[in-house]
Length: 339
Image (tube, rainbow, N blue to C red; front, side):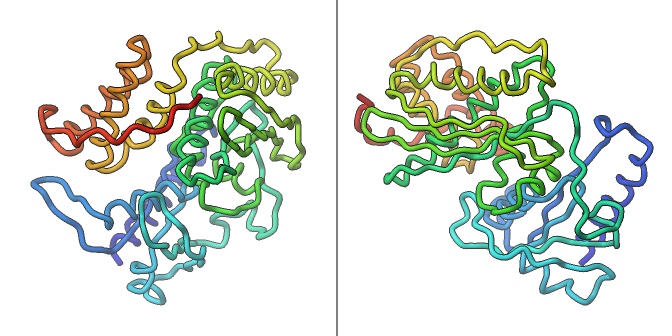
C-alpha cells in the first residue's frame, strides 16, 4: 500500500514542479508496481516479481502508474484513488498473462482539461515513434526478425537531423496492446507513428509499412515492398528515405543518412537474434554471446555485433556483478541458411 501511495505522491510532486517548465524539458517518469516473491543476492534482487514490475513500468504512460492484480488486491478500496482495469496483458518473457490496473488519482489525471472524451493534444514538432512490426510468417520464431527490422528503422531515423525519435524501450511497450493510435501517440508524446508488418518466406521478404499523422489519424505514406532477402539493407534505407520525403513540410532540410555497409545476411540474422536476447535475463544475455560471436566470425567488420557482444558483458558486470570469464552456454544449433 505504501509503495502505491509513494508512487502517486512522487508523480504528483513531479507534475507540480514541472507545470511551469517547457514541455521538452520536463522530467516525466513511468512507474510499475508488482507484489511477488523475489530472489535476493547481496544488494540485488531477481525473479519474475522484478521482471513484471519492469514490464509494467515500460507499459505505463508518461507520468502514470501501473500496478499488477496482486497489488490491486491489497490496495483496492483502501486508498483515495481509482484503479482502472486494463485487462490481461502478455508481457515480454513472462509466461503467464498479467492483469493490469492503471492508477487514477484525480479528476484530470490522464485527461485533457478534465474532459474524458477530449481530443488528445499532440506535439506539432517532427516527433515519431516506430511501433513493433507484426510478423505474418508461419514460423513463430520470426518475431525477432520483425523486431530487429523496426529497431534498425529507429536507429536510422534517429540520425535524421530535426527528427525526434522515441527510443525502442518506450515504443516497443505497445507490442501487446491494442489502443487507439491517437492514444498511443499522446502517451508517447509524438505526432507521427510508423506501423507495419513483415512476412519472410524462403528468399523473399514483404514489408507493409505506413506513416500516420496521429493528429487526425491520416495516412501520409503507405506502401507494400516486396524484395529479395539479399536487398534487406537497401530496403531499410528506402523506407527511411520515403518517411523523410513524406515529412518534407516539417523537415525541409533533412537528408537520408548514408547507406549502411552491406554485411553478410547470415551474420545479420545472427546479430538480430543476439541483440534481441542481450538485454534480457542473465541466461538470455549469455545465450546471445555465441550468436554475436558467430556473426563476428562470419563478418569481422560487423561493428554492431562487436558492440552488442561488449554490451552483453557490460550488463553482466553492471547488473549481476559477474566476471566476464564466467563459462558461456553452448552455442545453439545452426539454423537453415538464408539463401
